[in-house]
Length: 398
Image (tube, rainbow, N blue to C red; front, side):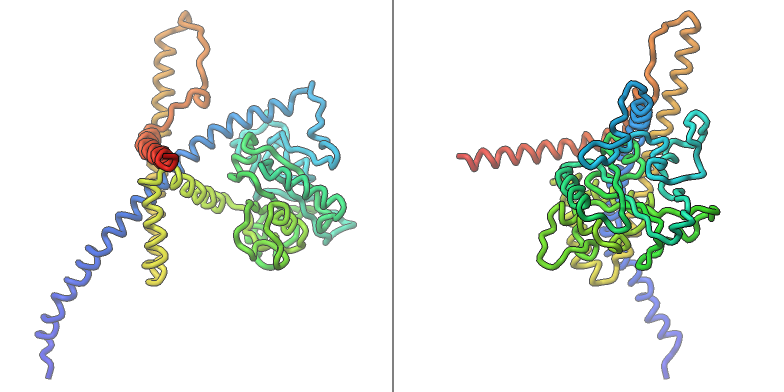
């Protein structure tokens, strides 16, 4: 007969031993991924802060340019030979596409909503044509880039071979466009607008959108190039995925757009974060670059075979969100202190004080000191990497 008290006594030390050693063994992984997520969050906060203030400047510039009465307006009517219009005014860009929205006013002075609401993509509608009800409608916007020659070739192709549903085109100029800032995209890309319901990946937002009598909700997808996943293109076997062939496969196929997820701010932030991590890994190879290499090795050889990938994602998210929010709070607090000090200085000067013009907050914004300190630290790493590269090149010449 087993003696139950003795059995429990023999098991009890192991019950305390296993969790303790499991914690000790996993502690380095936990700290590593918290640190990696934290650094990525700081990079993302710095990017978002810069992008926000740039968007304010771009909005003012774009609206002011669009309102200049002495301009001939050739961009609104398009430029030959294909007469593709450019979207310049961010306060009514959806009108140029033949769309409507009910959350902002077309009169800029009457709006009390944040300016990023002008670029919001989840509140667009298209008036239903009673005669052509049920017909598909598609539209494309292209942000200008080094792929411009491929876009010109694409327009030439569709001039002779109309796109499905006779889709039309506009273009915008990134990165100087306010729309690119708020949509959180970059060039080269194609921004797809449609009233057609997806059958492969149904859009929950379109289904839950507030119904407007006489209007059909519009769904938007951002397709960025180059595309590396074959199933997201409609290329024939053996066709080289050149810039033109990639774009043609997207605009010529009647259903491939459904392979891409509908636009959401969360998804675009994730895409931009991946770009930032890749770029910073190249800029800082000896520090952040080594951390990302270690992360790839751990993910491929240890975490994925052990089904622990979700733990990695959770730790990265915790570290990233913590530092991102902390950095933004510090920046907001700094802006408030600057505003307070300016008010105190203005009171000290009084009405007879200096009449010297003072820059607005957006024009004289002080950099986030956390991001600035981090940038200075990593810049040292980048300078050392460049110096090693130059030394290697000199040795090769010798």
